[in-house]
Length: 350
Image (tube, rainbow, N blue to C red; front, side):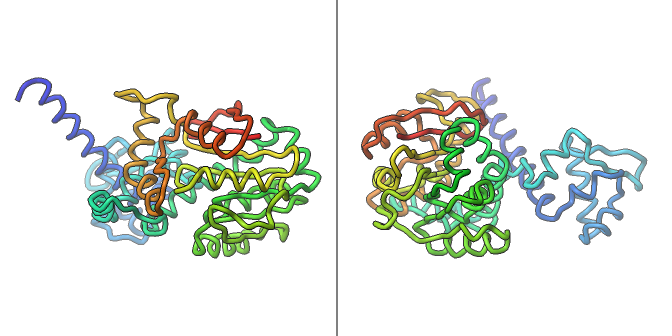
């Protein structure tokens, strides 16, 4: 084996270690183990008792986490004590834990990998709800954190005129609302506005209705099932139409944007949140681009191709692609808003 072959083999081995360690982190998150390791150092027996897991499992997991440099260890065997250091706590104990961004592809995709491979062979696709509950739940929580923590502030700072209209009670449509957390966040931020969440998946709409009820959302919020052409009665109703982290998954994005344009009131616009892909393809790429491509290969492209005909956009939706879709749908103006986020880019369509 020459030096180049050895280096690549070493890279694969390191990637394998990283993937396996991500799964052990996912296990710790699922079992709620990290929260117990913040207050004071614990022995394996103490963690087992607090987390209600087997003592032998607790010791093996703790030793693995220490070997990986995730937790610290003190004391002498057999009374080793383990602690999650302060610098690691925000990533592993937040709500939701930011570590889910890294864990999600490895832990959530693995169970459906055979079905993804079959979709590639058959040139088919997998619907969003064909992915496991773990993946969908983790993705939902990640986007929920963005919607609840960032969305209203983005509108207020980047679109002040729209913000003022919404405060007064103008209508909002949330297209591709999924489990409804974006719609719920908008309804809470603008209690005088009427908010309607639309999704083509009936199961997602039912989930959104249940989430809104459990969250105590305002009664100005409603959900409805709609395909790419949308309901006719929505024409001219909304000051703001949102499509948030959803357009790249849609089989017919131009048709969806065309309906969004028709749904706008005079002076309104469409807010898109899409992955922060680079302007152009280049290889090798940076970490964000590598992450987006991996998610696209394993999730977003199969979802987009689950309906035919399909644009087959995928996660790596570049600004030029968004602009092309918008112009094809009849929008005159496409602007990138001055909002900073490591994974998302916001567009304003007029």
